Image (cartoon, rainbow, N blue to C red):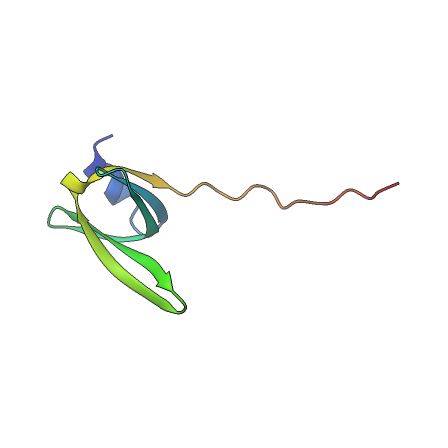
Length: 77
């Protein structure tokens, strides 16, 4: 699936983004506009920032997986 099509399908979801320079970022994909994606990322403490990345900077966009079923400890005998 082309990266642009994948981006539109993931708007509003938490994603991991692999960048062409080998780094990665994560956050909520907020918008796709003008050849860029806009992602709200956590900075620190109570601060968040919306950053944008052009499609030529992005290698892949992956949705976050679902959490596994809650762990239920077994009683010790």
